Image (cartoon, rainbow over all chains, first blue to last red; front, top):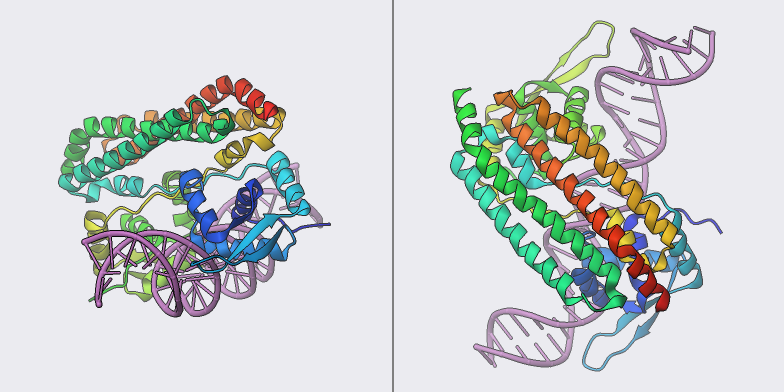
Amino acid sequence: MEISPLSQTGYVVLGLVSRRPTAGHELARFAEISIKNFFPLTRSHIYTELEKLEGLGLLSSTEVTQDRLPTKRVYSITDEGESVLSQWLEEAPVEEEKDRCPLLVRVFFGERLSSERLTTLLDDYEEAARARWDWYAGFVDQLVDEPEYGFPRLTAIFGVKREQAKLDFVAEARALLPELIKASNDA
Amino acid sequence: MEISPLSQTGYVVLGLVSRRPTAGHELARFAEISIKNFFPLTRSHIYTELEKLEGLGLLSSTEVTQDRLPTKRVYSITDEGESVLSQWLEEAPVEEEKDRCPLLVRVFFGERLSSERLTTLLDDYEEAARARWDWYAGFVDQLVDEPEYGFPRLTAIFGVKREQAKLDFVAEARALLPELIKASNDA
DNA sequence: TTTGACATGTAAGCCGTTACATGATTTA
DNA sequence: TAAATCATGTAACGGCTTACATGTCAAA
């Protein structure tokens, strides 16, 4: 059976459900501590994708009533879902990265900025990068002896390197800033 | 006069037009060689943003007929546009980065992948990173003695560091891969 | 006892992409 | 002379976010 290709988000949600049957809210919480850093998802979006995937027969769902909590709808992956997911992971071309960096937009228009603004922009950016660096590094550390989380751990290693690159950039930008400001004042 | 906040794209287009009066197609070509790496834009989206910004009074436009080429609509920034742009650059909080990395999604689900797939994923990723590294480095080099492009040059320096981080990651991932594959076979 | 957090979802609407359209100019 | 490229836009649609809704539980 031919399936029209899903969105990236569709495959990701499928992959997350494939780990074990999950309800929307729960899945969103898991996404928040696992893939958020390289594939952010909103809770609402997850709900709509779950519904769509069920409509396509890639997931099935049952309502589960809970004591003292609202009834939830738990989704499981179907055989067809497993097959679509595996094929995507194993064969689909990797999508292009199209990242936005709001800081760099400010830097690009740096001539229009006051030197105070430039300084605080770098300071804030550095602080955020440092915080994320810590978070990733802690994750890497924590999973050092858990072989079953080797691949997730590897994604955190990526995070450390990415944040380190930002920190390196801030250092170099700070060093160049005086002459950049001077040049833009001269112009 | 109160202006409802624009989208990031709106401000970026405003900023690009602020450099000099520009038509849509031309602006898209410039975006391709300047901000693409940290703020990709599609041509179509640029057209719709230009129209919207004119509707808000931040840009004005005139038709310009050309010899042997279709008539184009050239946009210029208005005084109000200048003021909105400056205020955004100088005061607006910097938006959160929400980047997707399609490669890391594959890595995250690495247990489901064949070792061949994992290897070619890393190879391809490395090759792309290396190509971009070269591109950025060339840009940095080319602008080394052009003080008026100091800030754009700084964005390319960022690019070099970002791609370098990816290359470092690939190296580390390759080193870890054998034991990751072993662990996932054992499980 | 009110405020905040947890839990589960729905709906409206902008953002952004892909596909469509059209004509002139160059190239094979 | 057909095919590819440049140039300039338009329109439809899906993706994704923000805001809306509702009830329970814990804490101050």
